[in-house]
Length: 69
Image (cartoon, rainbow, N blue to C red; front, side, top):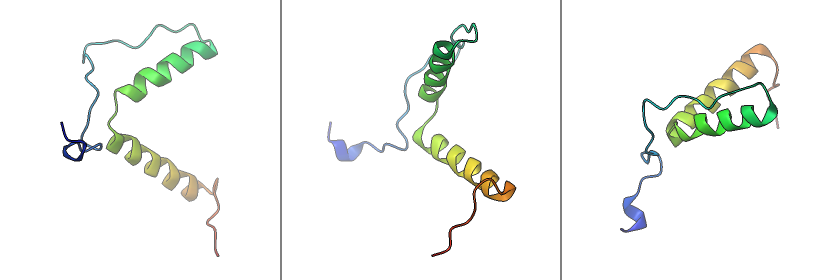
């Protein structure tokens, strides 16, 4: 397969839709497993849209100040 044929924004990891989240006991390792599990279920486009929404919320709340050159 030619790498130019692959659009990374449309690529999706094959995940079982019925797969449940990993078990959690509240430890740091459990949180890391849950983060990785959740990350694998999202496309790059979804991750980018999430990042933009978080940045907009941070700017709107004043948590991040607009930089002026």
